[in-house]
Image (cartoon, rainbow, N blue to C red; front, side, top):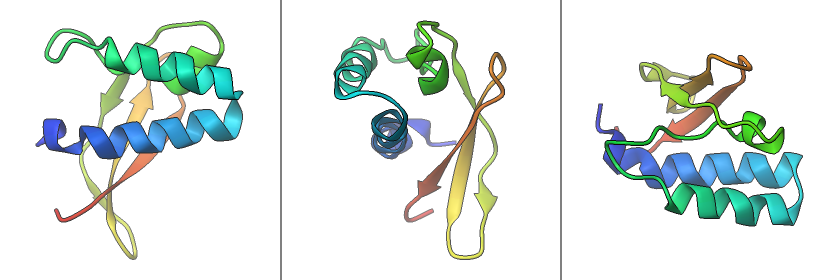
Length: 90
């Protein structure tokens, strides 16, 4: 898994989810939380839990192939939400 290369794609997808399901201030708070992540130390926050005031990590799954593109699912063990992130050029 080349997760480091995929992080901009993951961020874009999670931010889109926050904007669709939260308020503009939530997106600003999520951006601040994302920028505070220490690579190799912190886990990515689940946007669904984040909106509920919780901080639970997302776990990457194996890449899956859809009809038109490949994507990597990210799931939260706490709330069972799944985020499918399109993977470009893999």
